[in-house]
Image (cartoon, rainbow, N blue to C red; front, top):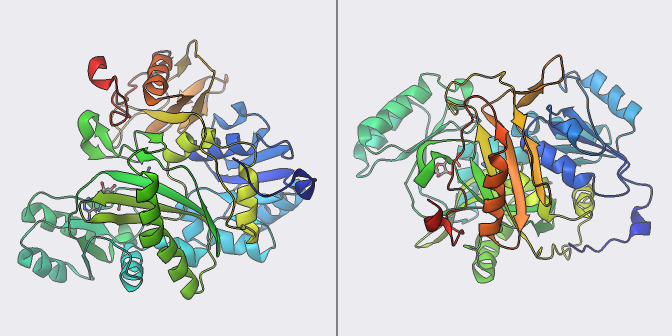
Length: 443
Ligand code: AMP
Ligand code: GLY
């Protein structure tokens, strides 16, 4: 990656960085940020048991809702840049609050986070700006939903309007299932997040994730990625937060990406500007590549998980400069992220039962790992009193590898995964099947 900033310009900055969040995504951000020699310390609030295995990283255990304590701590630590990982603090206006206190923050304010925390708002935003997306209807009551579901010739996708930890989307095969989904949402399955429901035309095609780092006006694109949302092999089973990913996604050729930029990315940023939304953070475009072109399935106001873990190892030490420039409104728009000569892939290991009920607290044994161009980013882990690494979440950890091609990437990832064990460990064996030439031979 080469960007238009000189070292001397940046000297004596970016000494202390704070990342808010506790997932694999935040650990991978910390790992990429600490590569820069200006960075002396990366603090994570709260991080997880994997955070302190990362060079220069330290966890801080304070409640970000306790605003006075937070500011006192940030002043004490002399924090130069704050990166907010998850959507909930962004939707609650944490970035606005910290900016008011004159911190440099990477992460949109509450107004920009609405792209993610209100699906109906995002759909209307796209409609107004002529951004391609599935046709939709916003409904405020079960009666209204029933009328539309009954009159539709095809089953509709049913979505709770608000944040639902990735669980608020139903893709029914029949009208009965549609009705059931709408009923469960209006009956309070997701609390206030289900006061409004979006009914959507079902569209088809492969999905791809595109990330634009924005400074309010200008943007830089990260390498594209493809996630694997379904729990089981052959893309079957329930939706999850993501079971693995690879980057870049060859599906988006340079020409196709140009089309995505013209039809989706630039119109989104222009429309934010027209609404006076000063978006300083990442916009995650969840796209579907349909027969009639690219369409937005969803916007998120944060990095994808596990896409972030997959992309971060492709960044060089200048990555933190991009985040800082976004936070200051200083991108030139000319920054280039050069194609890395390697590609990257990530496999997530989960607890048995995820995304439904699962048990935690099992010891994690890690054997001999081939560590060259390979990272383990913990997602849900904790330490026992004796310092033993334990499972502490549905998605437990990710193994991420970089190599010259995807066959080599996944060969290494799965070889290393054999060295990792905990009771009930589960992972898909077919992550990257779309890009592994040897894949058929392996199964
Ligand atoms: P979302 O949380 O909005 O990303 O939705 C979760 C997943 O549901 C997406 O990744 C898609 O696989 C699927 N999905 C969402 N909306 C649609 C749609 N309109 N048509 C088909 N699949 C969809
Ligand atoms: N990987 C999907 C997400 O982060 O929403």
